Amino acid sequence: MTRTNDEADSDLPEQDSAKEFYSRYEPRNVLGKGVSSTVRRVVEKKTSKEYAVKIIDISGEKGDGMAVEQLKRDTIREVNILRMCHGHPNIIELHDYFETPTFIFLVFELCRKGELFDYLTQVVSLSEKRTRFFMRQLLECVNYLHKRNIVHRDLKPENILLDDDLNIKVSDFGFATVIKPEEELTELCGTPGYLAPEVLSVSMYEDAPGYGLAVDMWACGVIMYTLLCGSPPFWHRKQMMMLRSIMQGNYTFSSPEWDDISDAPKDLIRHLLVVSPKDRYTAEQALNHPFFKREVEKAKTFYPRRTFRIAIICLRFYFRLKYFYHHPQPVSVEVLVTNPYGVKNFRKLIDGIAFCMYAHWVKRGDNQNRAALFEHSMRDDWKTLPCLQ
Figure 1: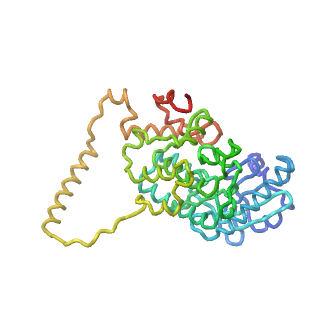
Figure 2: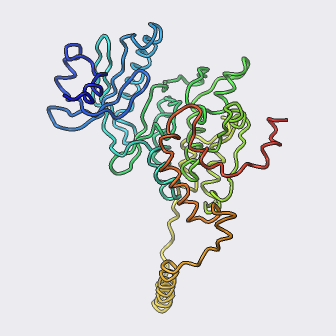
Figure 3: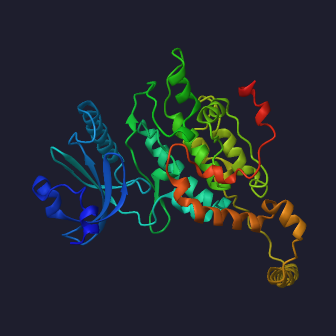
């Protein structure tokens, strides 16, 4: 075995300490690493099928005893919730589970297309049609969870995986919990850019009420906004400024990113990114929004002559469109120099190149965010924001 393989396998438990796991699975390459866990691709020996195993270290070598006990309790809670959701097509499937005195093994289905975050980084932003496809599946998943009084509390593109057919699989239920009717949570958990205002309020003010299922709907609004334009609605280099914007619900559909997007998705986002959780859409309400509706037209009388005339017009239009596609109108040098980001094709090209160059920089880190790549000019209204007065 080479030195590289030795280093790659250094985090694997000893064979003697996890005999049951090794008797069923053969570990392969590392897919990802966390503070106390490692995700690897594994092959089930009996069926030769590939899965992903999350190996969680509970030995205590990487943290104090209390932290390890809390990690163990959180993992067991995650396993129980995943078992409650077994069979849903858009929730990651827990295939197997093993526990030893020093490690916990969670064997999941393998999603080869990776994270929705990585997919978005490649394409920069999604069409309304593709966004509708993803958001319908996400909201159906959230509706399924909420009907069982399960709140996820950490929905974000990094925790949404894609299978071979680009169907979403919601994963990472580490913060998920089951709540009783009318119960309010007070624990601060999640990712800053996706936290709902009520989660921030309960952590800042002693007399603030707790939060419930509606926090997931706020996160859905942030995700939908990000899918359509490529950058999140709330972001600032100074995290406190970002949190203030979240609490006040300050976001805009800025130009030029939103110029080509219709009113229906914007309206749905407005109903999701509502500061008051009581006025925020539920998952069921969101699924009934016109953005997801397709009107069925009544049968019309067939007019052959009119249909033929329309076909000729469409054919002429097609050839004209094809001509202009292959012979595009020239863009003046002055426009490219003064405002290259205002030309849609150049905007997509610039963003694509930026993400190719800096994808490793924007992917991880508390103070780094892909939204920074979109700050091509300073906003004039920053100095007049209410939070700075």
